[in-house]
Length: 407
Image 1 (cartoon, rainbow, N blue to C red):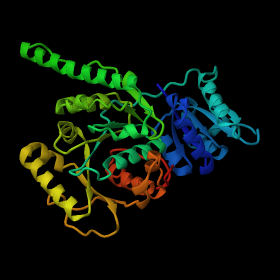
Image 2 (image 1 turned 90 degrees about the horizontal axis):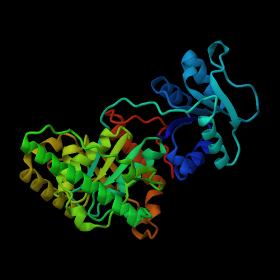
Image 3 (image 1 turned 180 degrees about the horizontal axis):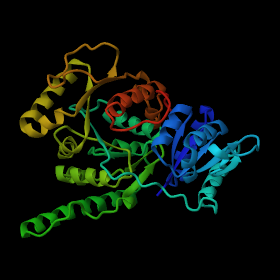
């Protein structure tokens, strides 16, 4: 289990390169870092959480130690020292469980020193505090349209939330997995995902047989997800290795999808699961419509796209009325490639727009897939959208500064 580490440094020019390095290196498997450059946000976070380790500059650590008093004795911390001065202390002069390391040193050595302290004699083994058992929220991203930028939105969301310190799982359920463009997938990875699907289907078949025999059935299969999960350095999140087995993907049922979402949510390893769907009447999409806590429908403001959106939503409503009715209660509508003024009427199911994302002209001629995750304008608007759709309703809690986007 990765150690939950809080990084509290007021200089964003120090924080951002360190975050990028950790998330793009093997340290990302060992440390889950939540970063702060604002004193008030850091202190508020520390009143609500007990991380395994706090690493910070002198002012941030001193403010926390004074505010926390005796409670700080239970949390290990490291001072990023510039001057070799005395360690900060809690109220009453208690030094707590702290030590100092040089603030300015090569990042590999810095992170090795942090890990060594985690395992050292002063601190013992820093263990990850157990999160309260509960259900991880699921954000389903769907669209009646193909080619509307839905997956680009989903992947940018995963990246920006991951950089902010949230633990995100990106579940791509498209038949042609767009995530494969951003991945160095391997045949072994595909085989692992195939094995997971086999386990999911086998458990359901066994469960049906038990139900028919009147035997007691477990609520969830005893499946360890860890071996099937890969870390995606570009998107700063976890995911399954993308599969090119089209027939296998097309055979994923609504029930399979629902069980995958339940397994991920029950693992208690993530702050948010983003489910990126395919066509709006595919069984995988129906499973997300049923299992998601919040649904984001992506629309485009042109005459043909609005017409098609209305047709598909009408069909979905007539074909699956109960599912559709439940889905509408948790649906939000976002206009992608928005140019500033709405030109066409929305589908009748949409009471209004809940957000908009800008048109990025340079993406029309992108020949490097990574550039789709590196637009500062789009990233800034993605963060605003995340705050509006996810933070304000209380689905997730952000602990980072403003709407600053990270590349």
